[in-house]
Length: 304
Image (cartoon, rainbow, N blue to C red; front, side):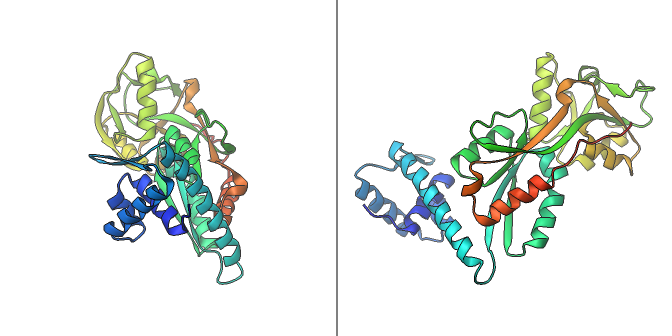
């Protein structure tokens, strides 16, 4: 039984895409050629590696075993290429970084931009995911580095402190009912209309979960994707909202809003940067990890 690197790359691509067609496209192979390679791999093993379904394919038990070894082999080959590449034209590679909403918007852009400026041969693929999804992706080898809420169960992953921020309330500067307040409970905030986040945003899911614990629902008037847009609509009296304190104080410099600290214990949000195995990372991914750890952000402070 012998598989070459192209076979392994194709198989990983097909499983990650959930489709032989889309997997073939990822590795620049014609569909017929890709199907032929998969068939030859299954004949070599003697059992099916993929379960064909109406909407795509899923790995069989044997396929999961091959997938684990394929990812490990490809990672080793990538590390070899990276280490040798340093002797030629400089390090080249792509890092796959996953982060939750808060980290991606407020804390990732600065360190990542500095890293890219210092490493012109490295590209970074960044994607927003929920913390549990990030942990799963790291365990499965789909991502190199993840940034998750400290409350997430990271299992056997290696985790390092990255940033701390608080969630706080933002209300129109002239709104009645908030005079003299410096902080407010989330439950009291739920009495007002909300400017919320787009469906599926990790911070939106987090807030909705805490509302359910109070047997309440968030009354959304509109849902947006960016902290700045949310604060702008709050300024215009559309509703109130909950945003990271770092974003609220940045927006307050140019917008007529008030910032109130949430008194709930869960409002303090710590984030950790996680990897499956630090020493097994490709060189450029390990360098980014070390840069993120060194760039760790202290808790935000300030008055409303």
